[in-house]
Image 1: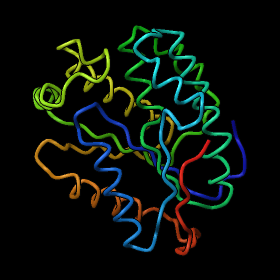
Image 2: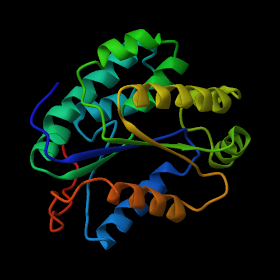
Image 3: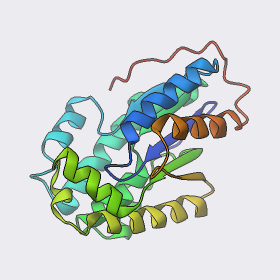
Image 4: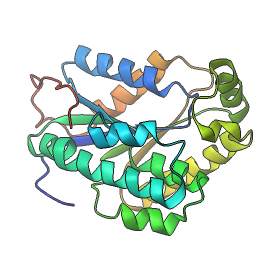
Length: 218
């Protein structure tokens, strides 16, 4: 899926327990304070398809779920991401392709199938991959409680870390700037500051500093 692209696309992915949601919120606050507010979005989206995907992810498995996630992503691209890029906006997505290359593989889907079914989605300009020590992640998940079936496997945190490294390597091979950040011993605010600095180092002068963030909507 291609089209005119005047904006900049940043994604933030990582295992459960790395503080991703808190970091993404802090990132938007940092960017706004620097006069570079970003349009915030995420996956699964808030559309009917995205809500169905989120609410049935424990019931639908393997290739069926991978296809559902991909369908929601194509909808996301068509209705939110591509219009933002065409408008010259900076858009930041909480989860994107890297998450698919990890979670769906944990669900037994071959990597070549995942790459094929997602072959027409636009790649980000920068992919942030948050990581943390697998033992620390497992501890955080235990404290927070099980929220989806992938947490039921005690080996999942270590496997996720390995798969995110593979996903990062794939994205780099496609020319994506990858920013891996270990969140084990730093605050979400500190992580957000590092991401914001990396984004602000991108050649985004053409993105008007007066751009206003728009609520996600699909």
